[in-house]
Amino acid sequence: MGERGLGSSWTAEEIWHQPVTWPRVAEAVERSRPLVDGLVGPVDARTRIVLTGAGTSAFIGEVVAPALARHLGRPVETLPTTEIVADPGTAAIGDQPVLLVSFARSGNSPESLAAAELLHRLTPDLRHLVITCDASGELAQRWAGAENAVVVALPEETNDRGFAMTSSFTGMALAALLAFGLDVDVEALAGEATAVLAEAADRASAIAGAKPERLVYLGSGALRGLAREAALKSLELTRGEVVGIAESSLAFRHGPKSVLDDRTIAFVFLSTDPYARSYDVDIARELVQSLGADRVVVVGEADSAECGGAQVWPVRGAFGSPSAWALVAVITAQTTALACSLALDLTPDNPFPGGEVNRVVRGVVIHEFGEGVS
Image (spheres, rainbow, N blue to C red):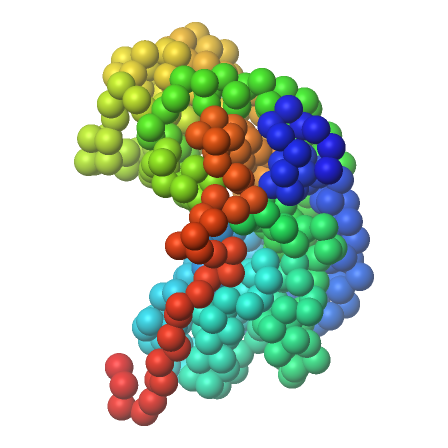
């Protein structure tokens, strides 16, 4: 693991090697193309498309769903495994067929396994696409070779060794976009990510040096899912000492804005969609009035004056959709969380040495869901 300016942990390595892994992710999807097309192609208009996962894996669905919906010309739902397990009726409705797309870094989470089994039991016609970073994980092993199921296993280097999901997040999101046939210029995506990483250590360290106690992340559409993932990275890598808050650019004024104080730094992800972007710019200007220009960071292509004098962390390109752009933009949040973790003298690869929170969730009891239970 090489020195990256933010330490030499597995977490740092996994953040920095993302542009290198993306072409390999594309190759993995292409190797599975005949099977994926055979599974996804025949799905009719009556079939519900449900994207699922837990934590970061659930946020993958929130990021890619808008792009998939536009591409397919139909609704695409996001439903975390944690909700499916707690209330299976939310995903199994009558006799409606379901195409379940499961995202899993390891595939060993109890909810990941239980959610798929519940839908297999309760849905008369279930198709299951598993996108995972671990071909040897329990989820991949359970569904490999099963009828009406396809497992797309990504390259081993996407299976993060660090505590927080970083390269696994972008790898699985990219795989989903490609699996459903979106035209993503992977080479251009990797090129911009490399450019962002070239200055990420300096930018992230400067933010961490301001010693924020709260990081607010805002975005519209697909970028609301990005904001949720960004906030989670802050919570995970700083052991909750830097609280991450996420909301959409418009909804933030409806109560969540109360969180702002003089120890807050706010990030606004500027959508690559011109209409959505106008609302992002509006909230950035308003935040500058509340916090000061030095405590507001806009991520995207913008002139500082346009955003009220806010700091600009440039992430260029559109890449066809905000969902694809998010794969580069998330690097700003990943490196900021890493820098804050190091500033607090924590160990990013294992910020919870006492085991209070674990890389693969523990302590979950899966209760029997029987007839007559509703």
